[in-house]
Image (tube, rainbow, N blue to C red; front, side, top):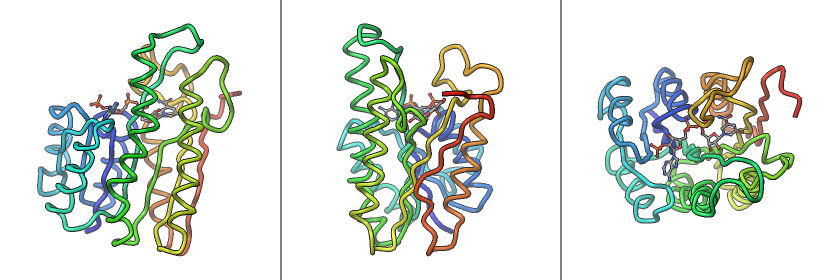
Amino acid sequence: MSVFLITGASSGIGAATARAAAQAGYRLVLAARSLDRLEALSEELGGPERALAVRCDVTEWEDQQALAAKALERFGAIDVVFANAGFGAPRGFQASTVEHWRSMVLTNVYGAALTVRATIDALRSSRGHLILTGSVAGRRALPGSLYSATKWAVTAMGEAARQELDGTGVRVTLIEPGAVDTPFFDNGAGPGSLQADDIARTVMFAVSQPAHVDVNEILVRPTAQSG
Ligand code: NJP
């Protein structure tokens, strides 16, 4: 059974993808800061032999190294890495707080890079698959949105990793969601938005392609999203 590691697995897109991957027969490594929620999900997916819950703050290099080490210790390989942890901020260059900005930039950009750094040797060994959660906002700039700038960085990171890994057998996919109804939004994503399961299916489409097919980007909007 192949091994699927997910950051931001305690909620939303990450949790939905964990359920879809378990359904497809993967063993899971579930990472986030909320260990209680990860353990509940692990139980739901068959317990720690099937889904290992690991507390990991993606902005902490020690946590990321320990995450990769625990995954390898438990399962012996890592086949898919889904660097998905992230969050947003209110738009406006005078909105939010500088502390929130700092945390968002560190999580969305530095955190994703640390996940790649911590797992890239394991991916090379398994000829595995790296998936990053970018955004529609990483493909077009949103007004007053530093969040959008962090996701442009993720877009670049995906392509940078793809070029570094070219020829190794490792595939790299950027998932670029539009509005998805998850706790990402304090007050819901609005009517007609995507559900986390819609993005989970997209991820599973990319990973289930034959080894010679690398789906590099998938941008998914709700049918009714203009921007
Ligand atoms: O949001 P949510 P989504 N270290 O809040 C984790 C992107 N996206 O599923 O640590 C480790 O349900 C947090 O866990 P916890 C978005 O930018 C979304 O929608 O326990 N984990 C939770 O599991 C993000 O990259 C939309 O609090 C950390 C998860 O991240 C990804 O989709 C649109 C962490 C967030 O789950 C998943 O977001 C789009 C840390 N330091 C892109 N900080 C959308 N929803 O519309 C947070 O284009 N997490």
